Length: 264
Image (cartoon, rainbow, N blue to C red):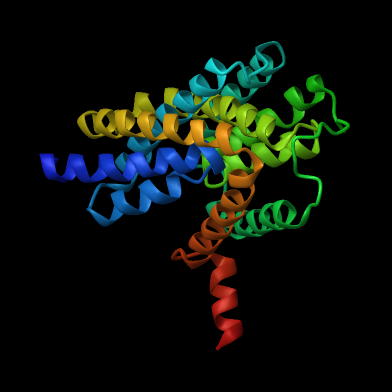
């Protein structure tokens, strides 16, 4: 186990602060924190479990900030959050059963599609659109599936929730950001409830990063409310593209390996 000293705590807390800021607006905070934790030599299982704790802190913080502004519809959101929590817990329990290579190949493609949609759709403003699914159907069919994915793998889950809220529930972009944070927080907590039982969390590091992520998410949520789609849309596109590129370049990604061979 790597020795956790003050310098390492402060460094990773600073990384978590930045990740919490971006995650509150467009998701993708884990793509900032996890690689850094791997680089400094933290065991992969401990890094994933510890990162889930700080990720949950960031999404809970962002949810609180949006709720404080009166921007979360709890009557509609709580049932979806409960199903997202259940999906996250089930995903964490099933983490060894789902082929990671399948997710590594599919998720970058999905992220690029999300980025393309948000980049080129002319209707992404604060105008309400007609919902394609009822809240009940979204609650039963969409929230637990995306939550399950978060428990198993995780990258891009905030963006997937956001896109689902825009396309399927007809929400404005700012409404989708607020709702996606609630659902993301729920599945993070569901997965964390399982990971915490494994004893893999490095608590001093987790608490330091969680506090920093909480503060970063507060700042990010306030920027999202203040600037609205002007900030959310371009940042979301950039984060999705960066996440897709990061996953494609990861060791063992079958799609990335195929593209590398095709270009030779």
